[in-house]
Each structure stands twice: as C-alpha cells, then as structure tokens.
Length: 384
Image (cartoon, rainbow, N blue to C red; front, side, top):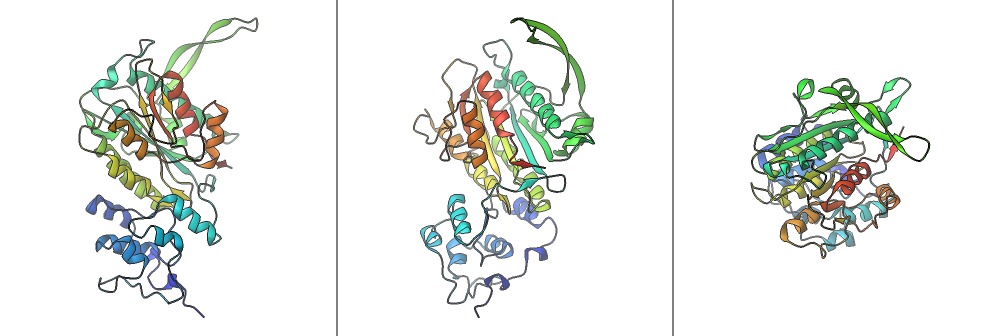
C-alpha cells in the first residue's frame, strides 16, 4: 500500500497560534499558502519552504533533500501532475490549483455556506489622499460620495443579516483607511481600536444618526421628499499622499490572522477604492501575496475600483487589459481577482457583460458604477 503523502510532515495543527501572522510580519513579502495545495504538500511544509527560500518546484518535485527541516521523500507513485509540471517554474495560479482539486474529487472553491458559526469577512480599503477632495459632477467630493456608499453598504449588510432575533454575525467587517494621516482603521469612536468587528457590533456603534431627505414615489407618478434616518460609521477625509503599499500590507496582516481563525469559512473579500497612484512604491507584488491568503474554500478576493470625477466612459469588469490606457490602470487590473461564479450572475443582472474570464475591477467609475461595484461585491454566496 502506498504511503499517505500527507503523513510525511506534521499537521498544520502543530504550528503555534498566529504562526502565519508572524511569518508574514517577519518575512514580507512572503508567498502565503495558495488556495489549495496538492494533496501531498501540507501547510507546514509550505511554511518551511518559505523560511528556507525553497522554490515551489523544489517542493513539488521532492528536490528539498539538501534543505534541513523539509521532508519530501515522496514515494515513487506520487509523481507530479501535468498541471504541476506546467507550473514548475513558479507558484501555481488559482485556476490551476482549482483544476487539480477537481481532478482529485475536491469541491469547487467559494462554495462554503455562510452562517453564525462560519462567518465570512468584508474588508474595505479606502483611499483618503488629498486628491479625494476633487468634486464629482454633482458637486460632491469623491471622498464624501465613497463614504456615503460605504455607509449605505454597511446598513444594507446589517439589514440583510437581521432576523427575528436581531442582527446575526454572518460577517466580520472592517475598514482600512490610508492617506496623509497614515494607515489605520477607518472606523472612529467605539470601533476605532481594531480593524475587524462582527456585524452586530457595528450595528450597535454608529458614530451618529443623521436626518436626511430622500425622494420616494408619491403613488401618482411623481416624487415626494421623505425624512429618513441615516447611520454613519465612516467619515470622509482627504489629505496627503497615497500609501497604497502600506495599506495592502496592513490588509494582509489582518486577513492572515482572520483566515487562520476561520480555516473553513468562505474567504475574505477586499474592496479597495482609490482615485490615484501609489506614492510609496509598486503595490502589485503585495496585492498578489494578499490574494494568495486562503481558507480551505478559496483565496482572498481582491476587488479594485478606480474612481473618477470626469464624465469619461468607465471600464467595468474587463476580461483583458487591452482597453486600459496606462501602466497604473493595467497594474490595478492585474491586482484584481477573477469573478467567483455566483457574482457573474449578479453583475449580468445589472447589465454588465461579466464572464468567468472577467476581473473584478473598475476603471474611471462614476456615481452609478461605484454603487454597483459595492452592491455586487458584497453579495453573499450561501447565507443561512
């Protein structure tokens, strides 16, 4: 009988708590664990490979005998698959790992049921640099409009998760804000101490409740103004530069810890909104590492939205970078995740030509596209 390849190394349970977090902090940029490793390669082996600077191909093909602490004495019948041979010069892409998992009878990613016992996570990463003061066509600043959309998104999440017994903790939610004041939690008041909070905690701690006026149908074909209460959790700010790299690192630290604490949950979703270019380096490599943080149900999803104050035609959910004008827009495209299957339908329902090949990315988005991006991006897969 062939030896079980997963028995060659200790289980991931033997890792000290928070080990992935410490690895990330001490060796940035590391390559976090991909969405689904081949069956013979467990999480502990992957960490040791990172620490010893061993390439994926060394681990995949059992060429680590000269590296202390890594046991890859694979049996002769545990040869690499065609997918692995195809990718031996680098870390496998998510699509390749998904195909390998399906060939071995494993389930598709992004299918875990979201429940009180198994929540998911939304992390909003918001640019608050000086350029976010620019006015959009209606006279509202970009910072103020994004803040309004984010607050409405939080309210809608709370509404969707509220049952007879109150708001249920289906999601952990956080905001990373970055700009001239550095990088930190976008929440203030009672929520300012940490980045992530359960949805019921957010419901209980708005900064304030504002009285606003909205127009509603009058039943006779017209509109009338109606007063409504509007909870505010996030305030607009705009100052200084655009430390996007630092913001992505902070998001990665938060989500490494969250993924370790929720190993079998639907993976975290990051919605990143910016109007400009990074002022502290190239964030593309860090975004790649962020997307590779994973639970057993899939990799972190990173959705990037570039917003614009002009009336230029937006590019929303493209499948290639050919229609994008410059290095910055193409880099944001490459930084973005592809569409999980259930979100393709949500996008097409709103009139977008999204496919399984599309990236969840928007460029030069205006009012309508910003609202749609948040709405589609926060659709849950299966919620119980």
